[in-house]
Image (cartoon, rainbow, N blue to C red; front, top):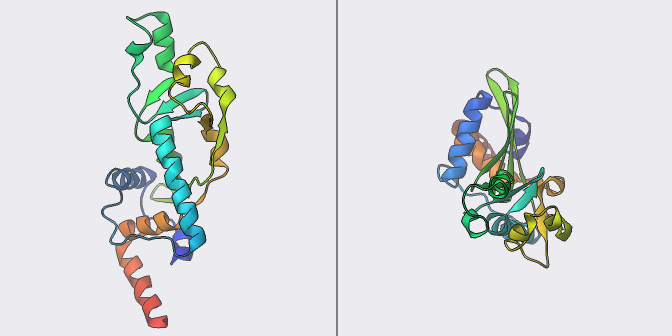
Length: 204
């Protein structure tokens, strides 16, 4: 089943695929007819390490392409008053969202939700494919908190010992999330998933 998931594209335009992905993320994959869980101790350990990363990303934020991203509200008024130049510049490098879209073109989208990276790519005008990766390790750097005069405020939002999560570096450490890709497969291609499931049952 995963072989078909990994290699297939979907009969959806990239725009349609993006909508399905976003709806699935926002509903926490509630429409998936099954939950795919780790099948052994090794996968189980990496699953829980990814959960910790997800918590850190949501609560501590991360650094990506010279901007700081937070999953919770950042109080600008605590550091700057009025519409001063410092405050306006500070706001330009801080982004508050629970879900982050880093690329959104006619050929590709990249969405980050928790520790999961969703990469959608256009095959043609009516077909597209999705790759889902999960970060189980991250790169951190204390020095990134000393980039500029605004970093003192940002510094207080992060763990002083671990340093800030460097998302670009961490992307390279991510591996395909087979469990989530199969869950999405069940949402997009329920009939085919059921067919493959029956074939598996017949061969057991």
